[in-house]
Length: 289
View (cartoon, rainbow, N blue to C red):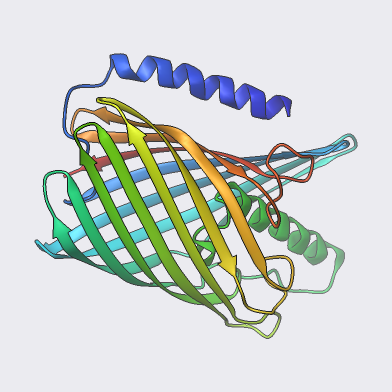
C-alpha cells in the first residue's frame, strides 16, 4: 500500500507540472502515423512480500493510404518479487502483434477505426524439470499475472505464453467542444501452440469520458469477459473482470501524453487496494509524424 501511495503522489506531481509545458493544440487521437512509448506499472503487496511489475511497450502506426494502415505493438514485462528472506526478478519479451487498421471515419476531432490482428507467440514457457526450471516457471506465472492485472486483463494476447492469438478491435474517439469520448471494444481468440493449455476466448470493452482544454481529466469503466470453460490466464473456469480508469490526457504541442490509474474491482486481478489485488499506473507519450 505504501508503494501505491508513493506512486500516486508522484503521478499527481507530474500532472500538476505538465500543464505548464503544454501548448494549445488539437488533441491527437490517431488519425496519422505515430509512435507511442508506454510504461505500465503494477503493484501488489501482501504481509510478507511485495511485487512490482513494469510493462514497457512500443506501439507504432504506419499509413498506406488515408483509410488504411498498419499497427505494430512490441510489449515486454518485468517483475520484482521481494520477501523478508530473499527476492527474485524476471524480464522477458512478450508477444508482438501486427494489425491491419481501416479508418471508417476521420475528421479533425473524430475517428473510427477497425483493426484485425495477430499476436506472434514469442513468449514461451520455460523447459526442463529441474529446480531452476520450476523457479523460472513460477516467476513467469507471477510476471504474467502482474502484467495482465496492471492492465485490467485487457489485451491478454500480449502476455499469453505459447499462444498464437487472433483479435479484432473497434475504436471510436471524439474530442469536440471540450468533451472527450472514446470507446474501445475487442474480441480475441488465444490458440495454444503447446499441449500445456487450452484455447481461450476473450471479449473486452472500455468507455471513457473527459472534459477540459489542454488538460482533460477523464474517467472510464472497462470490462473483460472470458467465457471459455478452461483454466488459463483467467485463473479460473471463466472470468468477468471489471475495472475503473481515471487520469488525464494532455496536449503537448502536436504530441499527446496519457497518465491514468487502473483500479480493478474484483477477481481475477482482485480489488486493487486489497492485499491480493493488482493496482496499475500507466504513462504513455504519443508523437505523430
